[in-house]
Image (tube, rainbow, N blue to C red; front, side, top):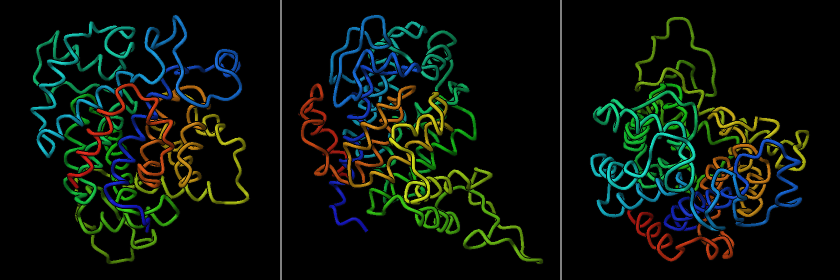
Length: 357
């Protein structure tokens, strides 16, 4: 178990995500790696200004994108109420985000609005639908990027974590498989905040929570994924998700990271192995791999996430939270904190939410 203090790990996860978001702001969505290197050099080492005519043009190094700003809205709600208050979070979206959107990608706070947020805006603002009927079918990681705050807040209550993360995800994304993968990421992050390491044993610990009924995944196999025996009854469903496979993936990525016969060199090429696009099934394996390989090295983890190109901002957010939970806030290099816009407020906000554990 990690000897870093619980609150330090919780704040490390939250600040790690915000740092990952800001690191990805400048070099976001370069699918041509030669173009990325021409614009930013052979190795990005910190915060950078977005280039003119790119996705976040007009913002400055250290600023948060819209994803980071939505995460802050959720953190502010958690800090104020001490728990997840869905009505309050939806009110904040209605009053502090949606009035500044027009349904197009290249608009709104942070310079770019992702597909799932655009779809929710259309249902909520143009179609006047109530929250709960606003989720679309984007297969991306926007829900994880904000829900990691709920995962940290309820890191010691997996059943509550699963319930609230699923409910919040459905506000913008309604695909059941995506919801299950989002809940699984939250459960992994919670285990790291508790002091576990992202390694080959973590998935077995998560499966024990499934068997106890704390995580709402269906599982047929016995311990160690052994097959059921003749005469065994069909186990009762612990919840809504048909398969626990999203909980098994992290340990396979960790096994690959630790296996001396499997080397991805340099590690940023994980984006080429698992895929550079935005979809959740590309993003999660890369984040799990980097967070396992660099479990005690925050800087290496997030910089390899960013230098891999493609949807590197999401990769850096997810990786930053996972590694920050392992190193703790105290293990994050000071320059990454100091370079954030409005760093003092963000530190105080994340400290307050972390203290709620």
